[in-house]
Image (cartoon, rainbow, N blue to C red; front, side, top):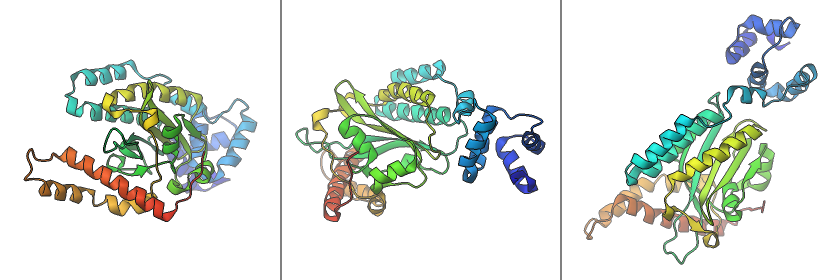
Length: 322
């Protein structure tokens, strides 16, 4: 019925990378599509997804929605990538080693877990360092990320998260969380609800009895992450941990996350971050030795964290324990 319209038939064919006549043959039963094309058909027709799944399963009893992903996606990390990461770990200067390794692993994960290169974002949250070793870790902050449409520019995202968030629960309770579709997220974490996010995997970054933060992977497709995906995520986590120094980790008992405001409330304040850093550097230029930019940024992150904790306490944000 859908491909009776010439324009729609051409649109679907373009998305699947096949000739329009192939769609006609599949519909008439003169030929059968490959599993990867069946999976792609579900993505090309999202409003008919549920009906198509039932119809395809009836005609192809062996069909699973993850078959195409497994067919196209290597089930192991390429050995050459291990070599690249280890080379960067040994050869990069200390000042840029962590950032370089995290960027490499995030980009490789995005490419590997999402062969279509659309509808996925991966980002890391790090524990915001407290002002002194006697104080607790009160929040998490995005330090790096990579995304494909509809998510962009994760590299410059600076949001704070606390116990009101999914990643906050992952860090506070030190266990991974796997969400299969958006209603689960909306029910338990309404403060940071993203209508585009369907499947979500969030994993704690743990080394021995210490934790550095959380790695979160989001897909725009429900029930996206298969056992193959999860095995790969665990393997990539081991590599990703090389992007953190010993000082980036905190003992479990140091974690006492507070509540952070919604992204919308944080955004206008965070937009002024660069100008606040500049003003602080100018203000402290006369001191000896002068404050460096990383030191200024660190001080402002801590100030912003306190601002947001106070803001959230005043607004009585909703919160649910997962």
